[in-house]
Structures are given as C-alpha cells and as structure tokens.
Length: 179
Image (tube, rainbow, N blue to C red):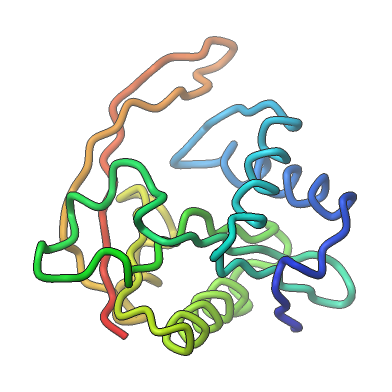
C-alpha cells in the first residue's frame, strides 16, 4: 500500500474518490445519499485548504481509501468539545476517512490515521480530533489508535429509508488524541 498527499491527485481522481465516498456512506450506519458533483467539490475544497493534511491510499494502483483533515479552527461544530486549555490553533480535525469496500480490513484506515498523526506532529500540531457515528466500524479503530472519547454530539442526518429520505437524529462520538 502506498499513501501519498492529495496534492498528487489529478482531477479525475476526485471523481473516483467521490464515488468511493458515496458508496461508503450509503451503507450501515449512515444510509446517506449524496450528489456526486457536490461530494467531488467538497473533497477538492478540503484537499485544497491552505494547511490541510490529506492523504490517499493506493493498493495495486487503485485508490483504496482517503483521509481529509483540516485545522480545527475551520471545522464547524467540533471545537466546543475540545478543552479550553488546549490551543485550538494547534489541533487538526479529521473531517473524512473512507475506504473502498474491497480493501477494508487490510490496514488502510489504520495506515491513513498513522500518516496524518505523523504529519500533524511534524507540523507542530498538539492534538487530532475526529468524530464518527457510534455504530460505525471506525469507532473501535479510533479507540485502538489512542483517541479518547471527549464528547457526544447529536446531529440531524438525512437517511435513505427505502425510497424515502428522512431526517433522523444520529449520535456521534467526538474523539481527541494528544500527539
């Protein structure tokens, strides 16, 4: 597996990433439906944020997964869970982590988390924060890699229920890791 900064991506890679993202988040526990062009635009925006630390993992030449992170000061709705004694300018927020279904359980997400941790430390960040649904398969991995639960957030999320889309409450854990 090779992990590289998203700065090496081509425009068409973002289309592939958007499809992988949409596939991942259409599954349990999310059941979400997105517009591909909006997802592509959002991922490109995250990757082009001035001080982002974002990575893509490739396996056998194929994009296997990605991680997009930005400084916490640019993230909405998360900073309030970080203790006031921590300098929020020195906290990196992992906005998205997703892995293509056929490459799961092969260390891709772990490798991406290790890479962002190393880079964040090298760039003088003191902490990393991320959030995930309590039913997510990422939940145990996040705890296993040294993150501590610091808060619980309830958000309204659009879910696909059969053919209907319903807005339902979703509990997410907010996790913090000291570097």
